[in-house]
Image (cartoon, rainbow, N blue to C red; front, side):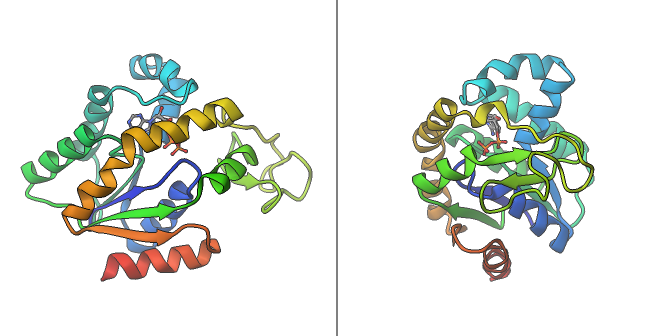
Length: 214
Ligand code: ADP
């Protein structure tokens, strides 16, 4: 089974994609995580991507498509893959379709997590993470036990630089202009599965499982 997860920043894509990948034994591929790792290690890709990410803009299609091609052709595929954060433009969606066709595979579902703009802004401005174990927290809904420290390892929690208010607004605009048209692309292929993203995380998870097993 091959899945794509779509939705605005802060819609819970990453969290849900990880859970679904575990449950269905799929390989989770997050372009955001791969890019953040590349920036941290200052690889050539990281250096090219850093400025785009800081300002909340998209990294150029050719860089991302190359990254995904490498991942898909070299990596272990398990029972299939979940792409989280890719595709994010129509040209990326078209490249992905070609990649699958070349491997005699196809995409089964595009899962769209729907969350309102107000909720997105609230979630991203309240988001903190642990730089050591990557655990995520959110104020006020999911606070750590001790203010500012990770429950797992006591590390001081950080915020993503692109979660600052001005950048969040730009990421939402970029989503609407460049990524939202993909919803129609997959609707026309009859594989778009729309999920209400503002329910309890467990309910969202169950709804996704039901939708992709249909
Ligand atoms: P978000 O919370 O905005 O969904 P991600 O962690 O998926 O964040 O991505 C963070 C940043 O990485 C994006 O704002 C963008 O700059 C870059 N990025 C990730 N995936 C892609 C992609 N498929 N195409 C272009 N840029 C991407």
